[in-house]
Image (cartoon, rainbow, N blue to C red; front, side, top):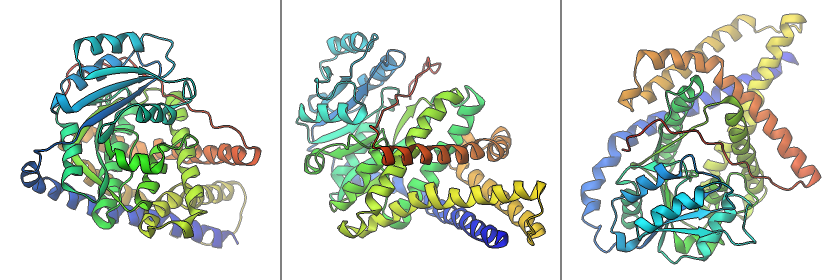
Length: 422
């Protein structure tokens, strides 16, 4: 029995590793080709749509000024642009700081969430702004984001030149990548997610996932879908499925770049990532149960990816680790000892190769320090994810069983040390 469990877990782990190798190849191809369309696309950027940039903000005084400095520098016709800070029940100086920028720049506005949406989380704040604006395109940025000057222009460029695109998502980079050991690992994770997962899935399957920030979506689609799901902790993933099911696709266009802050302490990271994991588990269970009702079966690639990541793959890792630990103290008659060591070693080398090749895309990240960071990351950060996903699954199971109300956790911000904007 132990051998069977081991082989099952081994198959699941290697399926994920090989799938990521497959995605990496597609991501690298996208990296080499995505800029080729820009010269032709620029010619169509004449009659531009109106754009509303939504910035949901709850107690963001530490970061909101840097964000609004970046918004003031955006390259887009100001008569067709409005930047809306959605001040959601803040008890600090968020509203006052935003008001100063609204006084200085006519295209920057501040709105307060109305009573039915106040203090209920990001989705409710975004729905509030959606009801009170009329622009053709909605762009969303988190309050800690400093988009590069051309970011919104490129997001809109993708929509203008791709009528079948319901949304366009850009690339994000880490502002505080060198702040702590944790942010160094998150920086590597972020790059790999974009070029392995996002670009790879777009290149092979024309599937991409809306992130929580740095994306543009057509207002008509948001109206058709009825806005954001206030029950979803991962409102971005949930929205992704509904956009595909409405007959559109989501284009990954990494020319649009934003810089964002990542957690610098383990406690903040744990709370943020637990919300992500629970949110994605909610989305998988919600839509897999409705699979036969979905109109567009292509989205099964995305649902399967998240199902495999948050259920099957982690089941395989947990089982294999458990068998290894138990076998140290009690002979469970595993007959695959030497084979296990060889396969474990090969898995580690494959992980190392995939990540280093992906980092080579961002040339500033390909260095000796990151090589050792990746090795350390495998034995620490990657293992932390295993515990976290299991913990998130326990919480999500309790929520479903006892019908608990979803509670939104706002990520704690840190003083920005990066003064220069891109």
